[in-house]
Each structure stands twice: as C-alpha cells, then as structure tokens.
Image (cartoon, rainbow, N blue to C red; front, side):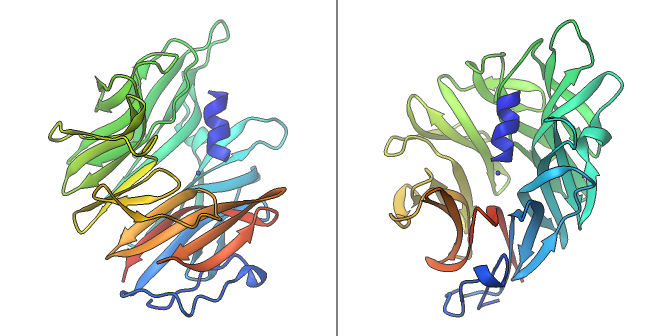
Length: 333
C-alpha cells in the first residue's frame, strides 16, 4: 500500500492561466473557438490549490503538511478537489477532499471502529452523489488485512477483501447507478480487470489505467498482451492498439475517441497530436469542442517545469521549485 500512497503524492475565447505573476505566459494569442472556464489543480509553495482562469485559489490544509491537489472536477458549478498530504509528526498520509474550498479529511471521516482508510485513489460526482474508491485496513495488529472499497455519500461498500497487503491504483465511474472500478482480484496484482458493482471481470495479462464514458457506454483502458488496449465494457468489444505501449488516458468529444500514451494523443486510432518533442510526458489532457488542453511536464535539471497548453500554444508554466500542475478540467460556458 505504501507504493500506492507514493504514486498519489507524485496526480473565454482568450484564456490565461497562471500560478503567480512571475510564472505567467501571455496567452492572448491562444486560439479557441468557444468560451470556457479552465481549472488547473496542483500545488503552489507547498499548498494544495487550483487556478480558475488566472485566479489562484489556495485550499485549506487543516494542519496537514505538504498537501497536493491531484484531481479536480466541476459539476453543477461546484468545484470538487481530491488531494493528499502528510501528518505533522509522522510519515502517515492523509487523503483530503474539498468541495468549494471546504476541507474534509477523508481518513477521519471515512474510517470506522473496525477499519481505517489507508488511501483514496479516485472519486466521481454524479448529480448530488459523491463516490470515493480506495483501500482500508482492518484495525488488527496480528496481521495486515486490506480491502478495496467504495463509498457513496460516506456509506461504504466492500468490493474485495485481500486478506493482506495489496498494491493497485483503482479508478471509478458510475453510470445509471452501476459502479465500475478498475482493480485486481489478488494480492500481487497478477489477476487484473474491473468490477461491476462487486462482481469481478478479468482481463488477462492486463494493467488497467482508468475508465471513460461515452453516451452511457463505459470503457476501460490500459495495457493487455504487452500493448495498448481498451474495452467497451457495455458492448464487450475489445481493441488492441499495438502502436503504443499503453493507454494512459482516454476520453471522448463529439463521439470522437481520444487517447494518449503520455507522449502523443491519438484521435480514432490516428495520430492527432504528436506533442512537443522537447517536452516531457502528458500529465493530463482534455478535448472540448475540438479544442485541446494539456498539462505537460518538461524535465529540466535538477527537476521539471509544468506547462499548460491550449491548442498547442503555451498558456502558463511553473517550475517545480514553486509548484506543479497535475489535473485539469474544462467547463463550457
């Protein structure tokens, strides 16, 4: 489970996004054909935060150290952020959640007398319902007993009990009250696939990175048989994408399927955006009404620089000595 926690710590027509005045890149020439709000979540000067159209919003940490915002969603004008931080006197990590800037310590709020929350790996908002997925550990000292669970509005459902240590980074989607979760069916993550509610479906020789939804059809994606792969769970159709090693993220826009292997973006199986060779991997991307929004991390010794680009034009950057961009969300006005 420690490896899961470490992986979490590491996750208008003319638009300008910035971290501070000295990190702004003029985006007056950024071309878009629609009016949008762009939200970018991450960390600034050791504080969890997000930016909305050039406006920095610092998130209260509640005394938790080194908080980072790893995922942001905006639903019905409410801003939801998932993050993680470290305790004041130990190396214990704390999953954190903000709705419109109000902090909830998920370790405290979701733990019970029988088990404690170890990590929360993803969340989903459907209407007024908030779902979390993560791992708990029984409060026993004779052995380690971990479970994959999800919570709907704070009510826990156990998906699978492992009876010991497990390493996996589960993602969640909810469609028509059905809960889909990527995960493993054994401790060493050698049997991987996805759960539909609590029923496991194996995809042999796979590592799944996430879930996507299009017109109420649910997809999962990642690696299978040593190459890129995705599956329409709703219809059962499977697609191999051997030109990439793995599919790290996938989404839909106007019924077009976009996916990335970190280096490039493909549209309906064809190269769409080869990225910028001088830059590093794509941390997150969104396509909305044919406009492309990307967070890219550039390796620059001794660290890296985060860049936000819109349709290939840089809109903002921040060096890791100041902070980082990790997640973005785009809302049509």
